[in-house]
Image (cartoon, rainbow, N blue to C red; front, top):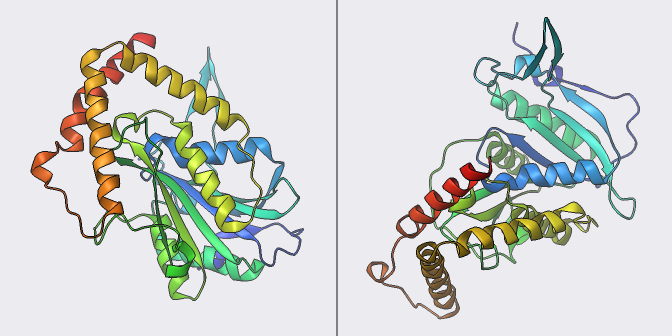
Length: 302
């Protein structure tokens, strides 16, 4: 028997009035360069008390053989099994404003039913705005301010952000589908993608999570503190700088990325100024050697 969307989840019996609350969401499994979205979720859950108010039927949504949960074996017995969870948690920001966080593995099955189930919860709780967060790889240097790609169900929700792309086709994902379907139903939804230097996509890059956090504060009115992300970002920047300084050749690559970034930024500030792409190396060409170098350095410290 095929489960109806309303049968995909269970809601706690003691949920307060959430009218006007914001729902944040991040799903593991799709692109998240620099673990930007995952690091933000970790920060929120560690900084603010939370409790689960809705739980999805993970058995009906997850392909266990494609993403096998970890189990712990000790000597002669199984000791632990890390049960995957796809849940909605209730949190309160620095000044006590409630907000919601939907997180867990991206469903492998029944995307439309899952999205409809989330829409039902949005309407049930009177959610005013839904926001998805993650990181995407970009040909930018770590020495320049990180950018952000913003998209929404209404243009005025992201009017402060300049589009980076005119039209592009990407692999489907639940977060994007959720935003699309919510918009079709008349609900406000936003997506934020932090730009992560493409040679750092495999590492946790806290600076990207900080960019997402700032965007959330600005667009929602929530007061979310960076907490440990600030110190983690500082340490990560110091380590990257140390590794880059160990190779003059890599430093030159970073300098070339900086030049490309500055040229692009200057072009954006001029009306109808177009750059000749043949004059500037591609990000992949510039970053390939740097990516190899950082990977080698990481291997030495493991």
